[in-house]
Structure formats: C-alpha cells, structure tokens
Image 1 (tube, rainbow, N blue to C red):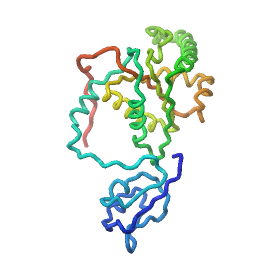
Image 2: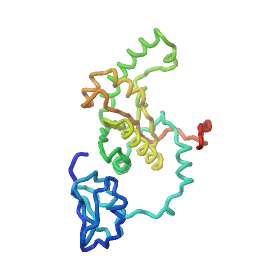
Image 3: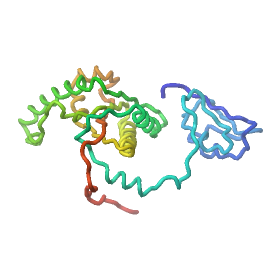
Length: 258
C-alpha cells in the first residue's frame, strides 16, 4: 500500500451495534463508553468497518474515492455472469480502433478493487498505447533466440511463427500488471478481463511476453522491475475483429467432496 490511512469513528453517529467489531479482520476495534473505538488508528485499511456500518460513522483517511452504496443482490444476475465467463475467448484479432479513456478507467477500477493478500494493494499498472512496439520488439528478439535453442531439443515450438505482432496481435492497448505477489497480479488480471468482456472488449493474456521478460535484462530494466521474481502479466486489449457464435466446450472439472 502506498499511503498510510487513519481510522476515525464518529461517536455521535455510532449506535454501538458492534457490527464493525465483529467483522474486523485483525480485532482492532472494541466497544468504548460512547462508541466503537479503534485500538490503533492505523490498520490494514481493508474497509470492512466502513462498509458494514449502518450509520456511516466509520471513515478511513486519504483515499481519493468515496465509498459507494452497495447495490442489492437482485441487481446482478449470477447466471449472466456465468454465461459471460463461458463465452469469453482469448482474442487474437483486433479492430483498428482505440479503447476510449472512459473504458480504460473502468478496467483500472476493476483492478483497483480486486482483493489482495493482507490488503497490501501492491499491484501496479503500465498502460501502453503509443509505444507498444518498443516493448514488443525486444521481447520478440528474445523469443526468437529461445526458439532456436528449444528447437535443438524439442519440436514443441515448431507450430509458432513469430512475426512482428506475435505477442500483442496489433491490439491498440497493452496493460502490464506488476506485483511482487503472483496471486495478486493474477486476480487483478482476471477482474480486468471479465470487465473488458462486459464492455464488449476482448483480451489476450500474452504469456509469451512474460516468458521473454524472464530472459531479457533489457526488458526488465525498461519495466523498472524491483526484483527478477516480480510477477508481470501482459494483457492485449481492444475491440475484437472476430465474432464467436457459441461457447467452446470444456471438460468437466475434477471435483471431490468430503
């Protein structure tokens, strides 16, 4: 987390219901004489207490966005969400059409509000629109070198033709997601992809870019990685130039019950 946030409880508004105390992840709240009281005014800043208070008596400082009212569950259709997940495809053909800034903000908001372990919020984003080639070309050089080496031992790469747009497929926008925690980065990427699909955009996870990055000091320096172990995911984003008519079939998951 970039900033320190301070917890405040308005004793005049608090009705001593205890909901915030019961829901506090780190047991940082107790009931005082007039209201709930924070043991320490700094915490995880997870916002559970802010979200659960019926009187809006709890606040956290130094956030740019104000809390929004939660929509009733009836406003969401679970079946529609499952259908969206079923019909999403990895897009490798994009229209020559820019992604509006308003939609980009929605994607970043989806990543921003994705949970992170211990509410670390340690996910950052690099949005590339004008200089995509400056990232793609050094990665392609590395991939071609890797392909020559791999071809000596295996034919698994023979089906790949590494052209000038192999990694990002001429997408108008590339999002680089960075985090010291792979799970946090992956969760943010998943939220962004589903949000993109909901707005009619398509996404490609460029796994080959992440592979090239591991073997390219030039790219590591360009991305200002703090560690070689820092997780980096690359999403190519744009309007699909192809329409799929039906969902693809998947094997049933292996599930155990106890």
